[in-house]
Image (tube, helix red, strand yellow):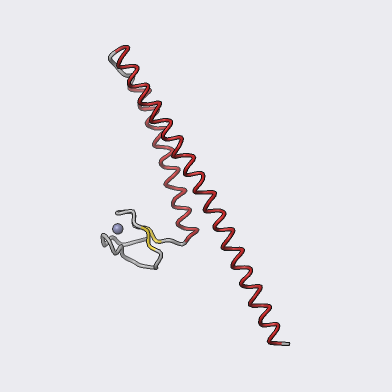
Length: 120
Ligand SMILES: [Zn+2]
């Protein structure tokens, strides 16, 4: 009886860790989707920026700095959002990351094997 108890206990533990893993995977894929959405928005903003600069130059041979700056700030804000989502994904997946060369490591290393920078 004790043996069967042990088996059922370890089985429920395994089931728990599998469901935890799959909910993590779902969360990561949701986060990846929101990264892709922002990347598309960035592409749209870059296109808008290009159209704006081109048409202003053709018509008036000048560009309004404030409008360009606003578009660039929008793009920067989305890039920052992507960066923080990537950070979240790395913490969910428990991945080590080098802020200098942007390499990712799964092992628990203290220094980046590529560039030697100390990892946080
Ligand atoms: Zn590095």
